[in-house]
Image (cartoon, rainbow, N blue to C red; front, side, top):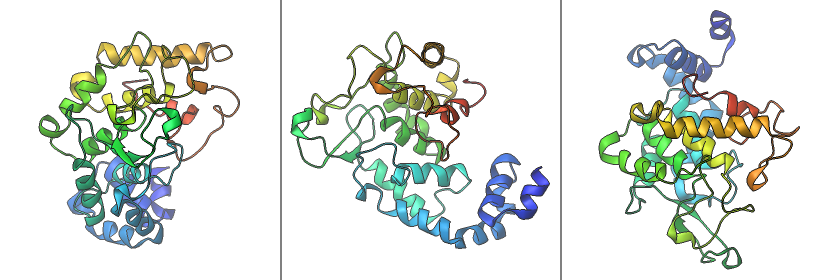
Length: 256
């Protein structure tokens, strides 16, 4: 199957297969990497991350958000040797709070508890994605990532992670009971923590796994913050970035 994919795939997919699935040394893939970078789709995605904070984060389901584009580019094997990716990573690192958590630009209306203006802050549904991108971009973990991850881990409750925002976003939270977990935030934290040795087999990860599995087992009765595991959840969709069965099942095997 791998040989067939390599024979018929576009250069960017060949590069992804060779660099990720086959773990080929990247210095041996320079020719195919250059071909992949010429692809119109890859050029469009690189352009989409260059002005990283140029798009307000208002809907995390939007596949065109720069963070989703950046994670895709990193997942298929590109790195900070590419100017646009280096620029995106640099822009992420420019906005970090006192806890070491990186921030997105969003606008929470006043009637939802926010300032009603474009503001850098974080929600627990986007902060793990930014930290995950830095991990995959090979940014120094101890210096730039560990402190923010440690702060987010403290937010874990008895059943996964709740809907939480930074102080910049005031009293905003999603449409659900305050004591409920946020399934999307919990998945995001599982994805992040699975990348980090010191958390991979931790109690907080087991807590998150148990929470997601419990929601699956009780999908007819429990749908916190309006995250349902119904018919739409069970459809196979790409890209795998939202709360659905593909996103849930493609967690690394040591996590789910």
